[in-house]
Length: 461
Picture 1 (cartoon, helix red, strand yellow):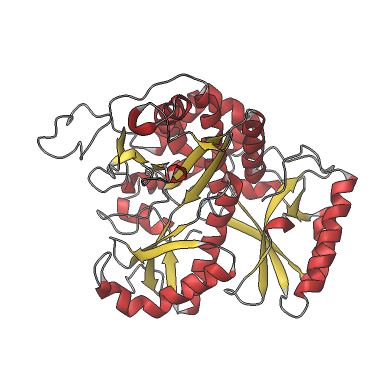
Picture 2: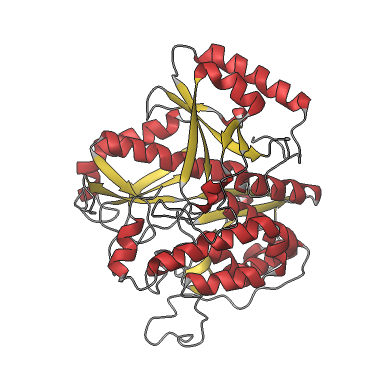
């Protein structure tokens, strides 16, 4: 489990972290050169500081310095001058969560740990995305609500070079793609497992040279940690094979892209709220209300879960991307897909939110979902009628009436800023700096052809 959320790191916590680091240092001597401490910034990119193993106790006690300006970085490597964080002064402390430290097989000789950011006096930094997720989990826990989440990882593999050139032939889900990629996929699975990622399945996906890995569900913070770690490991394995991995929402124009579908179940008193009830398809009353509130909140959540201009080139009808603000049982065209539990296993009932992708900051996303679920559990809301099939298909009874989700990042950002509950959960500092980052992304894409928007997002991790 990730470290518990506390507003301030006191001296006792610092000393305990240092002692834990000393013990890990002894265990890892001769196996690990250093530890990569990572977080994910407002552009959705992974950022890190690396400390030699000998420096881990100091990093655990005091953290390592990190400028607040990092969250003003734009996807092209520049700094957004309109960001409230664009200033040269100030410093933060990035502190590794040593409970989550793992030794990596790829890249070899390194360990990894997610980091939380604190101010110099030990207070949680208002813009720390992982701390936001930890706080939402803690607040929900007080209300007796918990969640299990998992984020599917989809990526496409290219030959080396600046352009995307599919590295593997063969059809989606096909043996014809598995055979030439079998050695590569074996290395992906083994490296993920070595990093303590529980792989449930892996397969060729529909798109060109595309693959998907499904991982085990965990608490929301651990689910976000796993997403960040899995992308790092997959990138490292792919590079070792002389290839490149693209997690971009859109990789080729007028084609399917990479999703980052989020699966979630919600629990109270040891029972899954999405099963065993008297509502639609066995939903309990709180479970149905959570799903209804999530469905209603999707336009605002998209600004977090689909946060780049390229996201909206993926989010198209008839591509199983979840372009419609509808729900349905096992309907892969719906933004919210209810997955019923197999007979005798109610714990497996969950909801899949298909409209999100891997350009999202996973900590902001899981934290926001947790916050919406907490409000929804007590809202007494009911779901609208479910939808089956593809509303965009000719002759579908709901063609023309099914509501499309917003088609631009600008529209979803407006929805986020108008959502009182999410505004309150994020807080003024985090929302303003995040919104500035999204507006910078909009400006960078303004006037560009779709092909250029796509190319600009190919290699972001």
